[in-house]
Image (cartoon, rainbow, N blue to C red; front, side):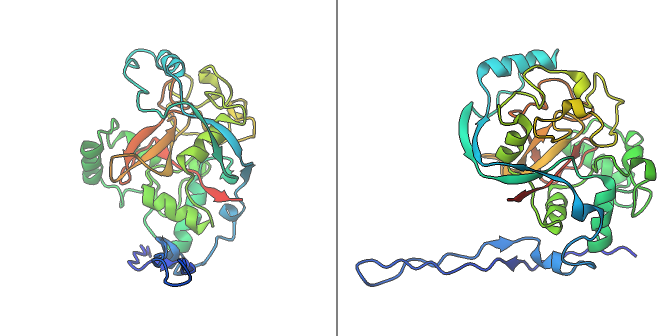
Length: 309
């Protein structure tokens, strides 16, 4: 029996009250505790508070603190438009300006979260898998209209689970059709969180700040993208020659990925990074970004988790 735990209450992280004393008397304003949106829900998971099998041992790469190359120059954006090809003339104009910025130490998943790993989370915490009951034809039609999604209901059948678990042949494919909230809940259950935009970009560019995970030139055969891929997700980590220098996989293609960073000036929208299995050049660079509403679901959109050191 499915359990979809929808707990309204939020646990708060304990924080000390900050007192400032001026000229020997008085006190400053009380600092409000930061809300933990997933704490109470995780406490009510069947296997709370942490997973005990595959997802618990998901391999993460440690990224050291230091200066990182972030954003893009006009020259990089011009090359990205050429890498994209026809129709790319007006793309990539909303990327952050090129800069060097200090990024703190963090860990990030080697690969996107898979269907099998997400199934463990559902078994522990309840919730609806991306199957026909959660996504009937009528709901998908509504999502297509709302989010301008290209793919019809017949096409997405391969991505829908037959029930509470994926098919065996797609168990190691990236999970897709997951909202921003559910992605964040999964990462919190793992003891982590979604990466920030800067963390994702630092991991994708490596310590040298390359445009793409493998270097400064687009190479369609180093990533699962439209030119060279099967037109579908595949097992994660199958193209190691497209890895970053630190060994992170699938950042130049396969699925776009949620981050925790809100899109500036657009309430309800967040920054999405990476490139999809149907994508073209220009995307998959560390600096490339998309604005997506947090409620969006798509067969080209997945996620990976990060954690503090």
